[in-house]
Image (tube, rainbow over all chains, first blue to last red; front, side, top):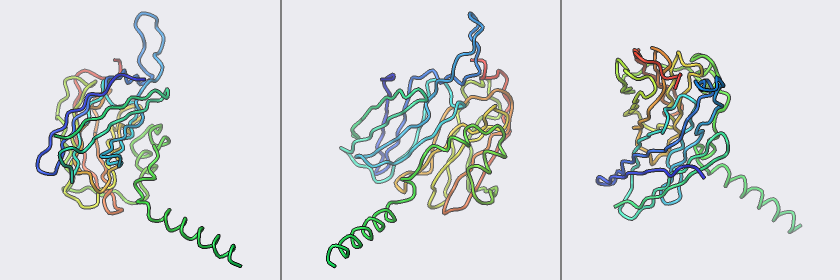
Length: 104
Length: 148
């Protein structure tokens, strides 16, 4: 299980503004460890799925060009108080993490 | 032949159910596009149609990025029926940084932080109503982001 995802959600009328922070090394596979001289293997999030009440709203596919400890923000229409927003990711090693917030 | 009729009915219903699922639900990660080494090949691998520059697509990114390891990008558009938003960094070893698949319930306004190895053109391609629209900007990087 990967590091926990931090989600911040703000509801403005029926639009939910979601900000998510996902602590992850996001190794691109080109970085060299200065101590060992070895190339650090690729280790990065490939897929992020965002669901509102179980329905997929946005899927983000990522390459190695996304910064370490990724941050993403997006907006959802037709959201209301009490809705459940879930974000999950999967990386190239098969590791996953999932978090949920209730909109208020 | 009651049984045959039932089987036929069942297969018709299955076909109808499959067709009724919105196309965005079929999304799978375009692995090949993420491995491509040039912006041109990313674009031809991802988009099956001409990509046109559009002032309806807004790409917000700093002119000068002091730290190439963390460059904030925001893409938004007023275009209708947005299906996807992609972010491409021309001079990165693998230019495709991210691709967002949006559902009809999404607002076409996404932000992310990307790595830039060196100064480069950054472009975004928005798929809306089956067509492709783009915006791009030259970004100067003072410290590259690929070393760490």
